[in-house]
Every structure is written in structure tokens, then in C-alpha cells.
Image (cartoon, rainbow, N blue to C red; front, side, top):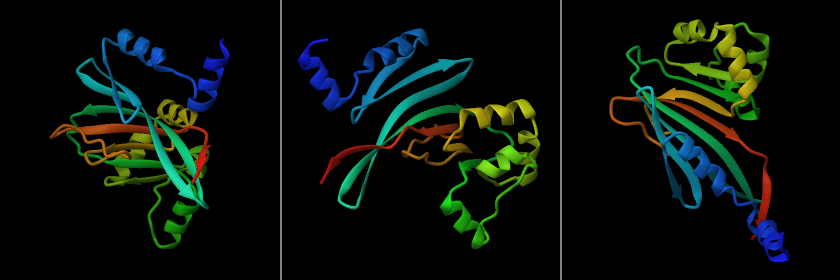
Length: 180
């Protein structure tokens, strides 16, 4: 690798576009770019999938931090109209509990200890999440956010009219980007 390429990679990070291009080709999808973030849209078994890498900047204490998220969205019709939101248990959810923000427990100690669960249909959510294979898969994926919604996602994504979306978001490691 040339010195120029090493410097460019150090400053801009690795160019992973070729990985996204390969993924789009394998899925017969379309690769797009939005504000420098790449995403692939494709259809499979009657569902539309959007897989994206999103960047979010946070300024704190005179420094700007870059947060990268891997986002996965699957749109579908939801005849039972269940909505649920699973987020990692953190200081904000603990504060919310103090002010009577309801956390649904499913009686799985690994899940209940790590995640905060809300739903518009508590008993349906519990029934769905009683499936050991499903709950173990969720725990192994370690999402920051997993939702079934028909509203805006974390980065303002919206499903088509009349559809819901299964929304998965996982934050990558926090990196210092630059000072301001």
C-alpha cells in the first residue's frame, strides 16, 4: 500500500464501498448513498429490506464524537397492529422507571436485565418474546434498538403507507472525530 493510500485511510477511514457493492449485487439490490452513508435496498419473499450504515455526530465538551449505526429495516403489513420497542437498559431508562415509565418483563433474566421493553399490547409482546429461539437471537445480536413501528425510525425513516417496519439499530464503537 502506498504512503498516500495509508495517509488517506488514516484520515478518512477505510473505504468499504466495495463490500456494499458486493452485498447489493448478491441481493439483486440497489446501492445508494445519502450524506456519505451507504445503504442497500432490495426485495425478498415479498418484503422490502433496507440495510444502512448511518453516521451521527455529537458535540460534547468542545469535542465532536462520531457515532456509527448499522440499521436494518424490513417493511410488512401488521394486521394485529402490535408495536414494541426494545432498547438497552441504561441510565435514561432507569430514570424513566423512577417516573413510572413501564418496563415489561418477560421473565427471562438475561433479557430483562439488559433490555427495556415497551409495547402497546403488553401480553402479545410477552407471548411473542417467550419463544426461546427468538429471545436468544435478540440477545446475541445485542441491538441498541429493536422496534416494530409505523412511525419514524431513529434516523427519520418511514415505512410505506399502511405498513409497519421491523427496525434494528446497533451502534458501533464511539470514535473521536475532531475538535471544534
